[in-house]
Length: 274
Length: 99
Image: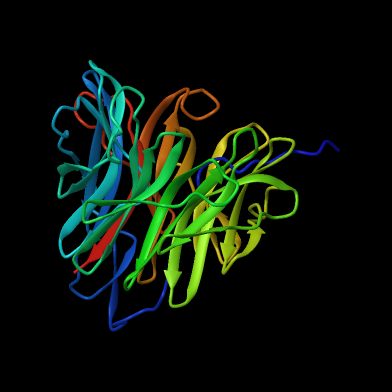
């Protein structure tokens, strides 16, 4: 019998169910279980190609309504197109998304941006970085109290470097020893501790999964048989750090993998796929 | 721990999937769609919310046909309406509030 290969395709993301609070009477509304009298709103961030260029969007669905609404996020000053990237966040009635924007007429120069309730703010690049090819992106937003943390990537003189903006102020993250560049794809904040995750690579070698805690980089192990991997999601619960991502074998097969406190595991395939 | 992503079947079609503590569950496709990917997951109370994108029409890998952003609530799929003037849409993240 022929062996059927099954590949994990897309970029995994993760969530933690930390605890249930409340837990009084419940009801089912549009397939969701909610507390009595509660209103649940679902926000989905994304983008759509339009004749004028790609446009970042947020869809909103309230209480299982059958009529979701799409709202365009504002285009940053000087930009003609934008995309969202990575995780969004909602707190205190405000909706946060991250991404990047560019001007299609002056050249593809990506600029990192985040939106609060649809209003765009361009994020700063390292001092002295300008011009064509000076691409950058924001990819993931997390909140702690009134502070807004955005992860992303900025160009430097040698390579792309993972970065974090706290309330719009840029910090570039150190590239792990022996690596030439890095990317950030996810961010989580627990109290005052900032966790950023992504990957790093040296010229001509496979990329490795990496995370940073308050700016200190750690290269993560890869499961046996995986030659290259990247982290695409991170969550923190107490002192436990969970990450998810993907990895490739030397034969180019792609697998979803996760890390729990640094121990790595390939996620199993659904039971009826063998 | 909840993880969202996708697997592919022997035909190369993408199947949106999420894992709860390592156990995989494949998500259903909205009517008339041919394949889909999951990109993001959040859990609120006892509800699991996944967002991603579905594809209509022939084409593999995903992206060759019409792609539309979508979400799943406890496994039930809904394709999101296209913004005015768009023929495709893509998803990157999901968040949920309960008040």
